[in-house]
Length: 131
Image 1 (cartoon, rainbow, N blue to C red):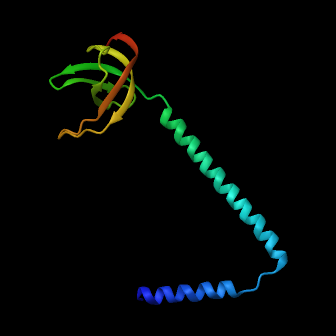
Image 2: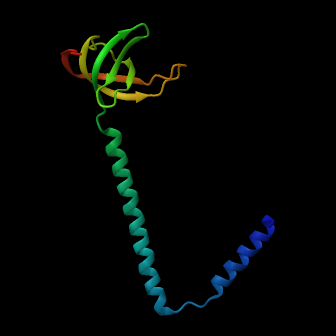
Image 3: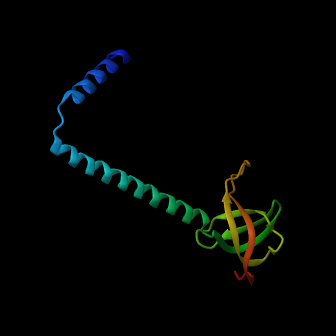
């Protein structure tokens, strides 16, 4: 089917649907359904916005042992065992200590594809790592 044929069929379908007579008793019902639909859509948008704001401001932390290497410092997450290269504010971070770091995860742009933890602050220093 060509686009011209499809648009012709859509025009005919629209004309037929608009040509049907409307009864007064169905107009009130349709009005209530439209209002209910609008209220439902607004409620859904509000819920999505609240959830997005909640999770975007949620504190993100990682806890693990900090290790110093040839490419800088890295931390191994205790929860999933993932190793992250450290960047950002690394002033209070000490190699050899178990720390809880606030920040966010970044994707690596390097060839090794090691994820990066962009630290913003040290939440807690637990002391020396124990194997």
